[in-house]
Amino acid sequence: MLNTSDILETVHMIREENLDVRTVTVGISLFDCVSDDVGRLCGRIYDKITKKAEKLVSVASEIEKEYGVPIVNRRVSVTPVSLICGGASPEDCVRIAKTLDRAADTLGVNFIGGYSALVQKGSTVGAENLIRSIPEALAETKIVCSSVNVASTKAGINMDAVAEMGRVIKKTAALTAAEDGIGCAKLVVFANVPEDNPFMAGAFHGIGEGDLAVNVGVSGPGVVASAVRRAGPVSFGELSDVIKKTAFKITRVGQLVAYEASKRLGIPYGIVDLSLAPTPAVGDSVARILEEMGLEVCGTHGTTAALALLNDAVKKGGVMASSHVGGLSGAFIPVSEDAGMISAAACGALSIEKLEAMTAVCSVGLDMIAVPGDTPAETISAVIADEISIGVINTKTTAVRLIPAPGKQVGDTVTFGGLLGSAPVMPLRTASPAAFIARGGRIPAPIHSLKN
Image 1 (cartoon, rainbow, N blue to C red):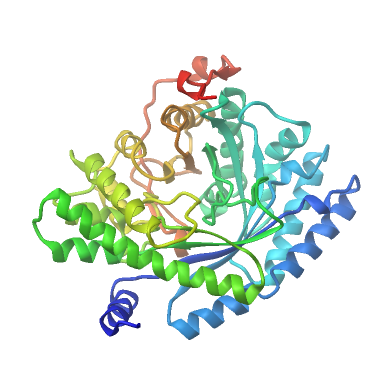
Image 2: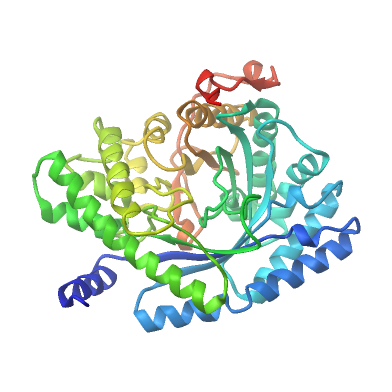
């Protein structure tokens, strides 16, 4: 039976507390598009994407209007391109990226993900060429997103790939300098990447997935912040219960949208990713949740403990609300996309080191962080290595999305607009890690990876 108070509460969450479904993402396998002729490959890719996801935008709009739930993004993810491009040259890979961009534009979606490579243990020719092509691909497309998985708990860390990604990020920033290096905002480096993530820039349709899937990502930091505020100075156990109950309600909205989208599109339901995904909008911030818990400002001592409580409670509440939970599922802390994080970074309360500590207990990692444009590639690689090692040792997903903003120094601001927001340029350590990065090879997997 419908409960009137529950309905009214959900309406209030949408109108006053920024509750939304962040994305409905259709995953599409491209394995049946494989061809040794790049022209034929691109033709097949374009035809399959535009056919299989042709109703995505209209169906999402129907659900949005019918249920009154804002759906912020419509997205597509595809099989990691490095797995289907064979021995394609870097130039051929860019041609594939442009095909993805054209298909996404035809559909009218916000982003398309899957310009990706999985190189945690080594690289194929296709993966190497795709990685080399990333700067040009992201500079010459608008809504293509790219990811590279350089490590896993089972394989260890591919430090050759880590070193290369430092150079790729630098070149991507340079080629998109006119837009503050926005290409880097569409590129993420992973450890233990999930195969069913609906969020960009890391979304792709993994090798264990079926031909098609609908994955939904929810949001709701503003709803959780309001619930914590109303709870007042309760004990930590009571606070956890408040967050769990709120996360349950948020995730139920995502589950409803996922089922409806699956039914209307005729595509199997995949997962709901119950991550708290912030936006630059006031009142839609993970940092503000932590401050509502009693921290004067996000980044001060106690922030990691507060985030650990939040992340755990979100998972516990959300997993009860959905038949299939996946993706990243927790709390995101992207600096440029979170008004509270932006404020904390601007006043100096939030440093790279504190963010790194926070990533040990939450989803993903060092996300949407602007650093000085003259940062050496080796330093970027070292930041990646530090963050990725947290994921490998702790058997969790971690990632890095850094923007070395061309021509910008500490204290300057980069502005991307929309969900990507803006960010103050944050300082990095200046002592060189170049000799460390130059060693090459692979950091071995941790002993606890031997679980067979």
